[in-house]
Image 1 (cartoon, helix red, strand yellow):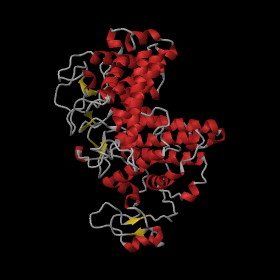
Image 2: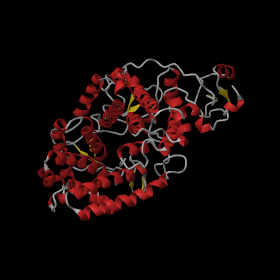
Image 3: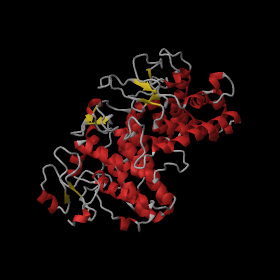
Image 4: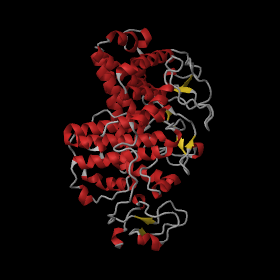
Length: 511
């Protein structure tokens, strides 16, 4: 290997060897050998900048998609089993009563909102309407309960099932992301109801225009954000506190922008103005989460997959931190390097030619041993698919400043080397296909580790073996995989709209 091909920053080195490889074996593979110290996580054997050989990958088990229609139907059934518990609208986080964190048989405000939002995305109004009406009843019930913990009930973390009384045990409180996430879910439903011509349901429960239900389930949650968005609260993982989490603020902003538009439709100009002004104030703070290398979650926990979830669940379709933004791409690359070396299963899978990467939560996580999570990994896939849709749908190619990051991402995730010189010549269609393949690779790795259980999706996968770990049948895991696959279909549909001659290519098959 030419020595000038080995001058790579430690954070950008992609492992080329296997456990126990020596210098001669490394060089025989055409890779660079630079000892990094005993016990270092930095690879000693790594790909040089002149690497041009594609690593062999097994053929995909499902032509064109990581999961088949049958697989998705199976997981959708498991997902529905966890919704509308006993017909009272609650969403169980997991039916597992025995996990390292205790019972998961509760309705978490965050998980419930995200799951019900996913339901609306992945299925039709006729299928989700009854579920949403039950959920609305649940929200109105819990919003108007007395709080036993001395805080505003709207920022409680979780509620007992099936009746919805507030959990009174010790927990991280307040959880300030809840009102915005719940409002977003209800706003999506309300906007669909407007399209259906059902304004009566909206004015009865969601936006009453009076003191009934505190102005309605949507308004009550949005009003909390206007008054309290700078309040100290818990992180997404319920472990630390800050008044400036990226996840919280990015999703708050999204709910307020949608709320501003909805309030205007309802003729409430005062609320619309308050929501818009607050959204703009929050938006002005978000750029401070870019440190020049990646988007960080908070000053007390910087490298965190909560950012990836935020970029998916809080994007306001305004171009700011879009999936194709170079700062977003740099953040993906940073987290890839963190999680790849954090979990032995990632290097083991790569050595066994299993494509993809598994994400955890954050640097130094120790919960249940500190493992990869299905929902954070599937969120990465979703972000890739959304990026592919952006490239082909807007007929754009990546900013040149992001190509070095894309090069490392493709080498890490799909085991392919693409030179920057060549990538500069790729068309939007070519690049979108590569980015879709990266999303497929991530889901392929999840599939590889969960197919033997009939696609029951756990919370975590063991960092050493890839076996199920922690809670079983986690609702949020199903929601995230199903959303990711919806976005894959959307990327394929967008491509076929522009290039109908590709309809016979199995890569673009809709599932």
